[in-house]
Image (cartoon, rainbow, N blue to C red; front, side, top):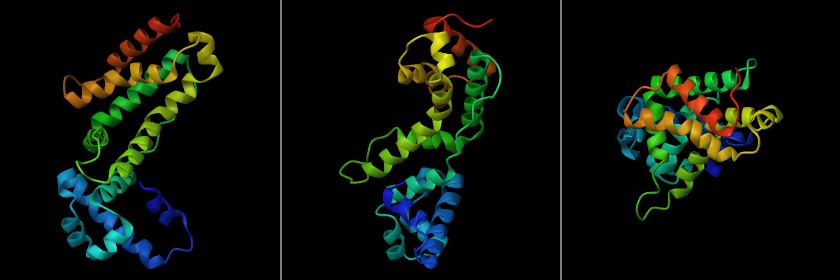
Length: 206
């Protein structure tokens, strides 16, 4: 979501009518996105479905990409909390399995991942909206893993390692497998991914 959009949400002095019109636009865009995919979220379709004028839409969102980014962000699930108990290995397996289930059970999440992986449209000025959403998606994915892997316990068990590369090793197979349709990533796959990670970085807990 753009900085402008966030400020509208957070500022208590914004005209309530403006908040209502923005909510109607996002509600309409969310319905179109969930039923018809990214291609269905056009300026004309959103204004028709929301019964909000185009001039009003452009007061909230500078482009169709900015509107789509805000819609995706509204539908972005909350970050999964890591399990509170268990060995580090078991916690990572549980967390990775939760992420795999989230992607597998929510087709819209795949659309989000595919969309943010693209660059800005050719000749467009919408890279900021897409990049801002991409940063939020990355944060959403990595936050629970950061919490586990940046802990003193993880450093003691695994030694010194690059946290970003560790996230790529853990999440990369999951996202690639699901997005390409090569296979459905199940808990057994997550166990193998985590065990390979431990084999690379340190002794695996029994």
